[in-house]
Image (tube, rainbow, N blue to C red):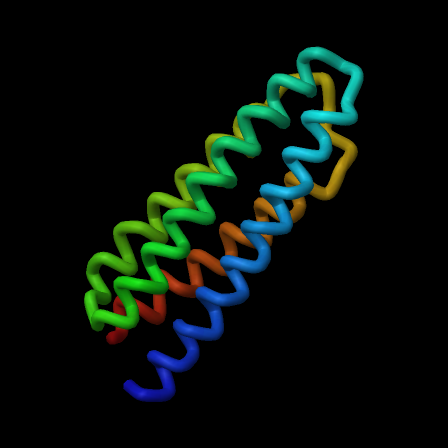
Length: 120
């Protein structure tokens, strides 16, 4: 399990980096977008990604304590936050940035964390 724990550490770090990049992108888009509908969505996504970053940081702390169940719970929380952002773009106007692609990638990374943490 030492190898699996190392893999979770690595994957959580990857998730954290990805979530921070998405947070920065959402904030930037909320500031620069002129479309009021998109501005609102990006602003809401920035809040969601801020929560996701916090969830991932909590997962990192829980992992250090060996609380794998808590890692699972807060990682699932991060995925819910990401989904909340993704769902905002189900209707037009369309998002042309990388935010949705980044969210899909981050959700995939979080899914990997869930699988590995269930094995620990």
